[in-house]
Length: 391
Image 1: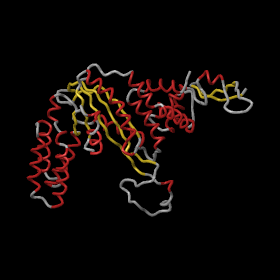
Image 2: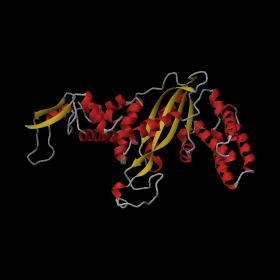
Image 3: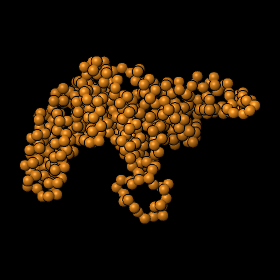
Image 4: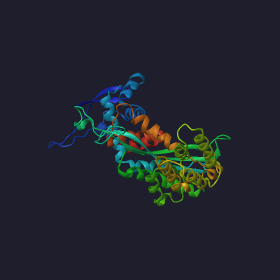
């Protein structure tokens, strides 16, 4: 008989249970834990779910404070981190199977007329060697050669799949969005793991969209790396490619500044004119390029160089800027859902003051948070219980 404490929804309890082990030694066996689904566990499955769900939204310290105030159990910060670490290990080990099981139980919204796929990145501070943004490569100080203090920013990836009704939210509003599903991954060379995860999400969406004759749109900002990946991937060949409208307007404003200078009323007038035309008139990009060429002949060398960079952007992406046609069909022209997801999934949780992440630790939080933000938590947790052998 060996005593062990367990953390339950009613607080910590101590149980005297039978423990068996062979005379030669080796792994022990506890029938109660085997039947209870608590092999090697300190917290019951309900406690693990509450802690994991809370950690998807806030830090270990905040989780401890919330549970102390609102629950009958009160784990410490170390216990909370250990619980999430163990839960994350199960999600990570069985992620593909969990993803397949979750996807198999989901259905396309019956009133969906279009689906949009988007990808974007968000910088987070990593616990790795490297240069940080907006800081000199070298700086004096006693900690300069201390590797433990070094960190760097890298790009975590987020993908979104959004369904639209084909109607406007309001008379002058954008297309009506039903809901979005998300995928995320910690920084990695060429975002290999992220691309695999997103492709597994997109494949059944394409099959459903083709069966229902839904429009398929691929809308992103102007990232050349992401566009090169998508345009050379057979999975996205049936999609309408669209450069995010608001990303386009940023380049349009830079072109206006290069032509007329900062704080010039003429720059504002030129910007508003071409923004309206891009939004409402087909084939505007070619006319915009002619306007840019006209003004470039009168500019100084530095302004001409800045304007050339913006001209290259519009020339390279002109086939992805058919905004007026998409608006008439009430189809999305902006990557708002994935932009919001970068903030709500990554930035608001992973970029708090003083936070630095390892790839494995950060991915565990991202997996849990992404399931929550995609309204998939219940389905994902049921999968977890089956893999964790919870009775």
